[in-house]
Image (tube, rainbow, N blue to C red; front, side, top):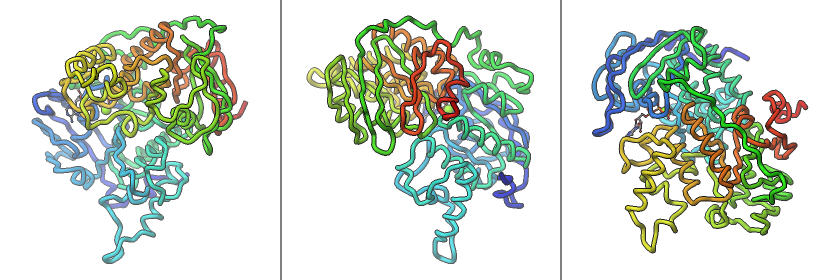
Length: 508
Ligand SMILES: Nc1ncnc2c1ncn2[C@@H]1O[C@H](COP(=O)(O)OP(=O)(O)OP(=O)(O)O)[C@@H](O)[C@H]1O
Ligand SMILES: [Mg+2]
């Protein structure tokens, strides 16, 4: 692999970037979310920025990258106080943010997205050829081999993430902020990203790496900085702290076991759902499986293995064929609403695209799938409000304001809201696609225990996840998909990560 940084950095931008936050305060209306944060970043180092959901990591980094103004305090870059009017001001200094929530124009092509606002011109005309060429080079750097003219709408989530990274690389960043970059990536893609980070660092680029995956933070960062409740709480050389210490610093207390004890399921119980010879053309072929009441069934596989598409087909979101029985009855599920009537709900991995209506309020989002319960015959705002108060408590959703829009929640808290939403209709079977993506360790544990409790009450749970340890720790059985085929189903009790990878990659 060629040196990315060398290939894309121009001499003009070789300058190093150092940053100082000085008593940075941020308020959204009456709600203060950053309470005087002070720390500094030196060039050529990789920083892990840690903290629970809602701690203020993304907000602080949006200030640094010019997306949000600060309320008081100051930001100095290379010793000079800066008031960015927008992200282009920050980019002019080489500060680039890769957003936690994708920031792509769905109806434009990949190349158009990469050069949006930075279009290349030949005289008066757009230089499409040059943009396509450079886009292809940036995509190759992140390992995405796809036509740069492809519309973003047609990409799967992991591909969108890679486009975001390629876009940032093409902006010649000298300080690159990655907000949960690997949440949707496979181990292979993650490795490639880590190599990129190492090259950038060798070239003097400062990297801020926000992640809830502490094993990655441990591997890729030089230093960790911990925030809690909108405040700076600690910084340390990564080599000097254990993962457990990082987790404890984040939550401010000792964390107990991450996974609940595994309950025994009655293996002779009639399946809650049986799927036979199910095919989603182009994605999944001839898949057959069943899940019992009380069982937690995992789905492992590489990105592109067809897991998400299999379930999108099952919920009627893609054309598909095959037989689905729910409690012994053959059913036709033409859309998620019909599925919900049969007691089956689905948490999409695409939280922003398909999961939540981010411009709607928290209440509306929560109750959208269970409208019958709140409309008798018209909507009862009070009942909705009570339901939201309960959900906020049960799922630990952190929000300053119950009347806020979903877009005002931090990434991890949006995830908790999405989870509350699909469980709101009280389904009998639930499919959770990446349920803990972007969720902090403490909240992850809460979600695992919640899933276990629901299973105990008789819910059949399917968990699609890229986190192998999560599948092993939480599930009873794990189904493995590879290239559109369900290759095996394994008992999770004695399963190892290596074994699971071997099945997923076909080296077994
Ligand atoms: N536009 C907004 N309006 C109102 N409140 C907001 C807005 N953006 C963020 N907040 C609030 O600011 C706080 C910090 O959010 P932020 O997104 O910075 O957290 P985070 O540390 O990135 O969390 P996560 O790990 O979940 O991504 C949260 O309480 C959030 O609800
Ligand atoms: Mg965030």
